[in-house]
Image (cartoon, rainbow, N blue to C red; front, side):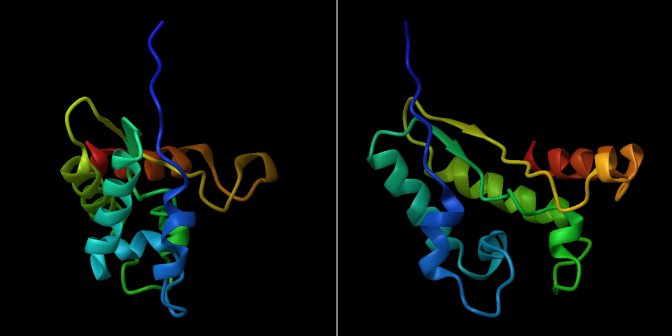
Length: 126
């Protein structure tokens, strides 16, 4: 049986680098890519062979009201590139797609809008 060790919570690891005026750590993909890369590299050095992109909060709702509103796909692309660049021999990269902050079960978002949100972020990750 093979075993694949996944990295830890990248947002938690980046919390110390998060400026107080930055609403989500995913924006560090642009403002402090070296910090994001360093976290990925540290997880790899610790034995993780599945690195996840720093894109959990790259959904349109989380980015609304920021300078990156409407740029979820691009932020996901940058997050995937950073994770890929840290992936050494034997490592794989997985895209991280968070649920967003509105839920169909509560009538806050329609399924078609939610599907499009996931699709545009997935395009960026691929």
